[in-house]
Image 1 (cartoon, helix red, strand yellow):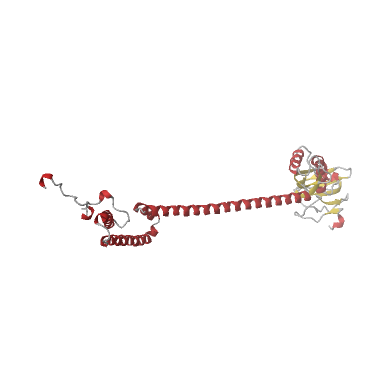
Image 2: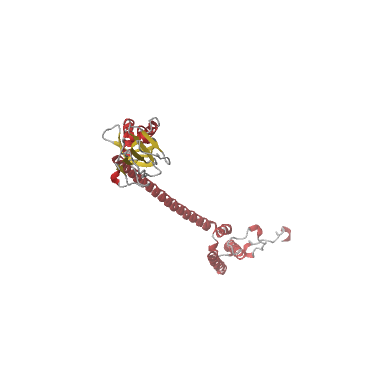
Length: 343
């Protein structure tokens, strides 16, 4: 049968978004002998009688005869999701909330829907929601979108389900946010805050880096000062123990240290030998005048010859006893006194 035999016919399949669940409307003749089933098996049929009554046949039930009916409505009773955008007023009339509504509707009472004469279900539902939500949203400022959304969701639980009067069963959820100007303004403020935080963090990081560099520089200066003091102490003490401690801390300088030590040792011995030789060879002073210098020269020569390579003289108590030179003894030393009666 062609579409001219229908008062209303939608060319819709199972996946076509619907705003009107009435798929087709067809007038019926009193003597319809053809009895052709031109409706879909999974849709319910609402038959209108000549007296104005309606009878519903849910699938798979179908009437055996249609003589008592004047018209038939094919109604889709499936679930249909819909999303819509609304604007709700705030406490300031110049600013409005932006609301996103997600709903799912289904024809629960086909007769009530046919009687309602509704042709646009999404618009019916959003209109009812808008009328109920306006009074709640107007209590809040545009910046209090979160509080307004919470209040709206709490109030929606007390409302009659949307579309009930039209025979619909619906579920819905709502998300409320500021208008685009307020969102853009908040985004700009957030960007400014992020840039400021980044600048502060960069400055703090730079300060930390500079402080670390200063600490490293101060540590280097302290190390140089400590090494300078250490070298001065070595030069003042010239002790084997101090040099041994230093070489234990810096073993890589052992070879260079020993080379310089031997060279200094040779120079010291050579200088002292020259001094002793010169002192013994000169005859310009009297013997009693040279006694004390000669004694010190001989002692220095003995100390040099007995000194180990380390540079420290051997302690006095560990040296072998030595005989004093005759030049160190004063005249008459070692002779017993002469008795008066012996002269």
